Amino acid sequence: MKKNLCPCGSNLKAKDCCAAVHLNPKLARHPEQLMRARYSAHAMNNLNFIMASWHPTTRPQDTGPIQQWNDECTWLALNVAQSRKLGSKGVVEFVALYRQAGQLKQHHEVANFKFEKGQWWYLDRSD
Ligand SMILES: [Zn+2]
Image 1 (cartoon, rainbow, N blue to C red):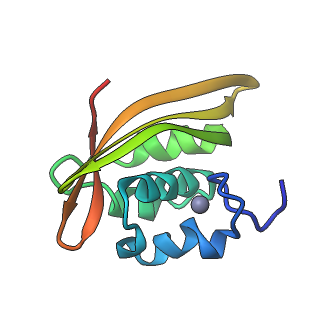
Image 2: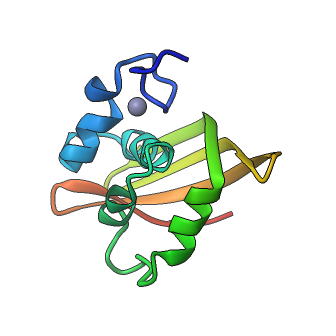
């Protein structure tokens, strides 16, 4: 993988893809874009964006476990299985591959998103 390419696998430079969304979440016009940016935030260890894109009603108070998980993981790839947008609601199903303690693992999630105050937010998971 080339160094400047976005971790989300878009084949775009990070600054033209998820890193731009990290600076301005309103650039994400579709829930999948926000989800990709959240994956890239894990890969780039940008905990601030992970928290900032989490809906205030479901955002965890304690960031410790997420930071620890992130410190232990090397994020390898993202596969988006499906995504859809219905009005102010969005659903993205994805599998993220990562390595933790020498083992290859995958994180599968059906994630729910909500459009509010001019931007998409991660709400919760339904799987
Ligand atoms: Zn990206």
